[in-house]
Length: 395
Image 1 (cartoon, one colour):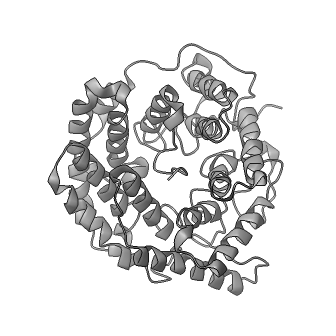
Image 2 (cartoon, helix red, strand yellow):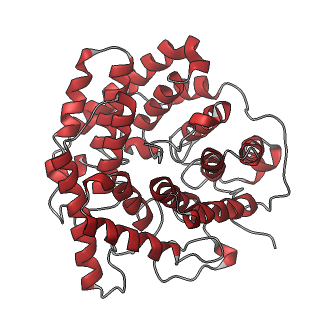
């Protein structure tokens, strides 16, 4: 059956994996002006800075490293000035849509360039932990990935990975994790849920990676060493609950929904391509085969339905789908997943894709545009170190 959301996968192989000098094209086009700095890491210029930093860290681009970092610094300097003017500290905590993510990327860029003042944005980042510690610091929902506590913890994990130092103290991490757990318990009790932890964002009980339960649980597993035995049990019960919400290898965008096949969401933001990262983390933590099996089933769905018509991006585009194969390669070592990732990468540059895919609003951005695509193409060159941008389960 034809679909409005994806192409049927007939093991399409078209052309090469690139349409030219994407990075140079992006550097020429991205605005470096404080009036155009909204969107954070998600679809603002700061996400382009992260891409340039990420590529500069790849040994295969050592000759271009200085150029990429210089351009990244130009962009992120303007972005830092922009978020410094934000009066609402609650908004500054946001990882993908606000200050925390921008301060994190500035720290990484400055450190990579050998500047000692990387401690300035790092200090600004660290000082935000108290802002997100109160249980209900955001009316829209305090716990999700884009603007909430989960995102702040994700940024701290990224900084620890890239800098090789502890970013927050165990006491600070514990306080934030306890706030996430208590918030989830309170909401589940209030709504009389038959499971221990649940959350909402703008009144919707999302399950996926973008705003939902899966990324929240993923971060709690990433910091499980600070949790008590009772708190760990609540998290694992919630992980297993979410696993049981699977519908034909996929998950609905929100709790209680029935997936309609003609409008099925197979995106990183909503659906199996994002939920898979939770079960990957669960498998890495305790090695139970059911979690790896769940990831593998997610990958089979992505192979069938992941050639999305919403563009090349990582949030709800083909690159986001293809990252699941790189995840599965790292989990299993099975080279068929590299083959699948390569095929998806090639299809993104085919005439069929260019003619039938939707236009992107922020064409050069990290999550919706070409900067995320570049990260994926670079990861194809060294799949043993590949990771979805800003969202690693291997830390």
